[in-house]
Image 1 (cartoon, one colour):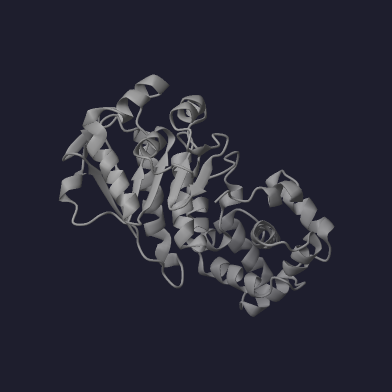
Image 2: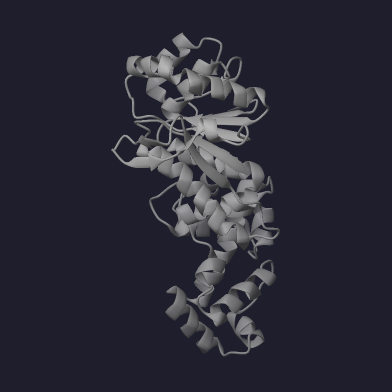
Length: 324
């Protein structure tokens, strides 16, 4: 995927970094999957050869005039202009007409457009959001609605998809925007990216931990993790797993405590909870069915585990699906 991220002076540093880091993480993790998704090729573009970010950093860029072809995807991150009147003055300034023309050209070519936060005003000013659902930063909703009445605005949403255009809300929504674009290519890859970035409820990191990743540092714990996943729906004893791995139960206990800081039984519960969470968020299976799929005799055991390990109910866990 070839993506051009358009930036200008006063680009919001966090928004730009969130986009680049999310796509960078996707590229770093893509080879974990089979088949391997195509890489993301990100180019930072501008009207000239460089810009100054809102924090004064010099950002080298590729001039729009030097692009070999019309971008297949173009993203406009936020500029650090919080006042509505100042923002309208910026997007309507004669100096930015070449950018608006480029946005229209990209849209007319059939390519994909996206923007977040104050960057959404550039898409609206170019007319590519007309008759399309969209969102923007919540405090800019009234001005946006008055200036662009043909846009179907819902500033209460974090992320909004229209025909070949995606818009996102305020600052942190740059990450949601990038994740939604990764998801459109590979749902499996975005799940990995989300967990490595610990996106979502950041009260703890435990909900994002991947058992198969944390077990990699030790061949015995890695073998144990694979064995458990192969017998996930079964009722088994830790001694059985140890015997089939060719070690004593005590050796397995020492390995998991030393490597993972937990007992083999607790690690089994983590693996089961990981799979249960996936099923609850991605399927309509009943809780009883999910519990059976991950090796519990009844839903009560799973409910208690979710409450103990995640601090929420099954219903809350199921409702916490990612919005992309």
